[in-house]
Image (cartoon, rainbow, N blue to C red; front, top):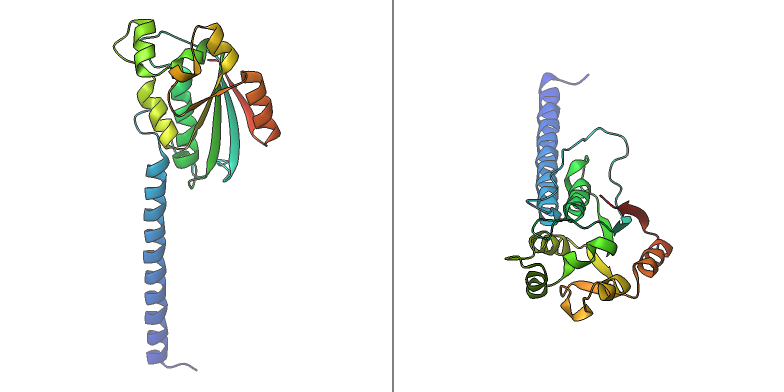
Length: 191
């Protein structure tokens, strides 16, 4: 039978180990929060966290987002802001951050949202490209952008007029098909 002293020592050791584990867990949570903050798209696409919900964001997901809808040239395209929401869902809405690889294909009426500042302002007679800040933050978060070369040229644009982080694909169709072949889940975004 253990003495009171042995039980007390055991309790103290357990308490110290538990305290150390909690401190380590807290440190990991802090590191994860830093990682989340680094990948969030601040100022756009706000989300609410659901830690106990089914279908949590899955680490390693790959999404091909097909953006076709345009809008008022003097305002942020709602489809562009929706992309920020997708990034924020994977980084801050679940019970833990999850890595996601997002590739965006822009065509149709969404094509010209990716024009560089000078070309956009000259074409639409605006003070700036209202999509630029959000697009840059998305790019910094790791989002890949492809614009349909067919739509771009049919709308009077040129590949050298798009933002420097946007690649001009042969077409939107080939980009979407190739990304799906590479394992990306297809998400159409027409609103």
